[in-house]
Length: 425
Image (tube, rainbow, N blue to C red):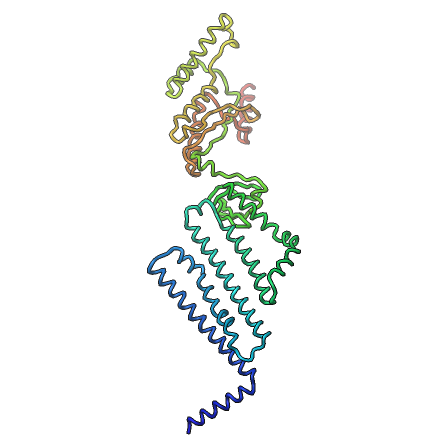
């Protein structure tokens, strides 16, 4: 009896549904949505679970990158919209317009997740490229960003065309008429892309290069090259972002050549006091002859001078007609010999000590050479050691370093002058 009552109630329910078609349509549509949701969760679980098991059993770098970039997550999210898109034909009482609208909406959602999956795939490719040795010198991040931008633009056009049920070509033709506005909006993007291509093709800039660009306050290592900006980490650990196109429009200094050459230049002057410059006496020559780095130079130079002076005949008695050794010239020769014998100075690169034009700061004696290392700390240590020694050696040649008078010097001079005046009085 109870069974008959249940069957009777079911028949009454179906009769009522037959009297209300919209209710039948709503229930069918809700059932389709529920099935799409369940299938979507099932596909998501099975796809991700199988990919994780595969990556554990056979470690694949590319599969790990796809999982981390959520490529399979985006692909699994396409399942519900696909179920709805192809299941709408089974919903009774659904009008043509409503069915077309829902199908277009489902197709738009499918395209959206397909776009997100493609973007995640590009991110995975960037991660895989970052693990290669080429990524240390050349960055493709700008190209990936440009590819994503183009992907989003065309996907947006296709999705909008799908929702309004129009051909994407109509929207593209409308965009063609707005090309001037589009070029104005994306001017920096286009300039940056062209600059990025030129920088990469000419090998003008790499990740890890030390560059200087004073107009932007940049003096450090390139840490990232993107489509729009180049990030430089200064030596004080600050980050400077430079528009990519500015690197082609303006000049910058790249120290990569120095690092590849294996030697870093030392170019610094010793400003000598001109009043201390003079000829060497016989006693000074005898004393300096005992210096091992000067013995060959003094012997060769004195032989040359004796030959010159002997050729002058009787006129050689006058001081102005005779050539003699000077303390500044001997010191210059010693400094050059000392640099060439120094173990930290590169023997295959330019090494010289030259005298520049005298001026208000004395006589500049420039040390020009290259160290064997490009390491900054080691370079500064070598340079400091060289000049510490040369500065301390100046009194051996009766030379003085030029220095502007300080307050202490003026005060000492006034005291000495006052003492002399008192003594004379």
